[in-house]
Length: 509
Image 1 (cartoon, rainbow, N blue to C red):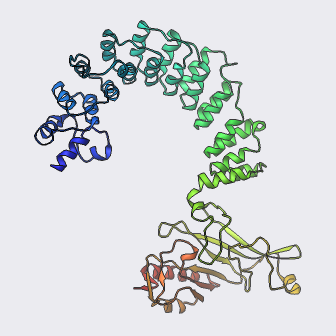
Image 2 (cartoon, one colour; image 1 turned 135 degrees about the horizontal axis):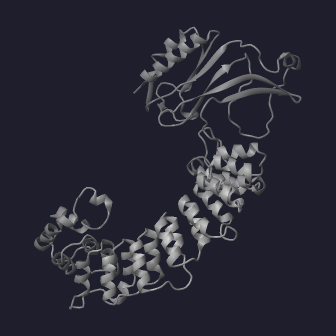
Image 3 (tube, one colour; image 1 turned 90 degrees about the vertical axis):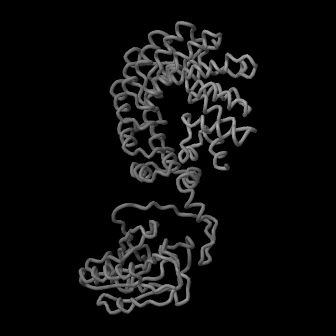
């Protein structure tokens, strides 16, 4: 019986994680009532009554449930109004035992019924003296597009005081309702209605309103700003061609923070004078790196410290939390974090060596990007190699640091500004591990050593060491360096190593 009790308490609770698996709705209510009557005679959850009212349960079933619960009548009334079943309200309001809603419980019943389009119920309630028809009832009906209810309301009462009823209808795209309201009820708050239509991309409503009001003073910069914020390019272009108001600096800020680069570029073309330097802050706060780069190319500099902090907090919070203030396994304390995006396409790193202000390129590295073990790691191979080049470890512990070597001036002078010919093609194959375990041996390493392109290996683990799946540079088990003048030979060696890697370059226990 525990399962039966569980079903009964959750039958109409509205919790989808239960109703998904237990299809107990109105049709099953008689069975639920029988189970309650036979096995549980004390009480059931109040939400059962709410759900029963919303789904139109019979008067007998409703009475059965009411006797075994403590109703929250305000919630029960709202649920019944959402359902719109007239017999449910007859059961509630025509009782003689006093176990029914109080007047305060009925204060929002007309608004709830109006929002769900139940005109018949509204008429019945109104005929019985429930006539608290305020602006809220008009607004709910207009927002949900129920024109027939608005027409009925207008015959029995009028809007009082300032209202924003047009905005709700315009925001949700109900053109017919907007037209009727404008012609029969109110002509106020037109600017607000135009803003709402623009922000939500309802161009037809915006055009209709624009034809009936003077542009100056009504169609302000707020309208285009709202369209930009909503990302509606067609609305923005139409406003540009038909309204002289234009936009404000807020439009640039919205486009930048939303990452809408085409919109940002268009605004920059036609309203450049309104774009201030702090638009780059908005792009940073939104983590929009593509926008940041484009803005930088246009000469916008000056991203503030606050914006950088917001970028770390909002756009890259997980990466920042996992790095900042932590001590790495090599003993370095992270007192700063460099956030760098994962770019699609080819990306290169030029290794340079400098002496007395003169800079020369010694090698070019091309990143080999792969998703391994569900981690978007970046591995790099040597595309252009020079013997005894300066090694770039991609790690920076200090901004300035002493070095224990001095460049040979004569040797440096012999270096070309950049290599014109390849001495050899090379590849550093960073090894990957696809599962966890304890290293036992490397049976396949001998195969790689016999390759004509093999140059050197660097294995970071020894037998008996615990090994983890590769997710970053610190979890790679080692690397194999290849070099050969023939590109095809090098490619074959790389393919062979990758195949061995999948099959198991390391034997694990």
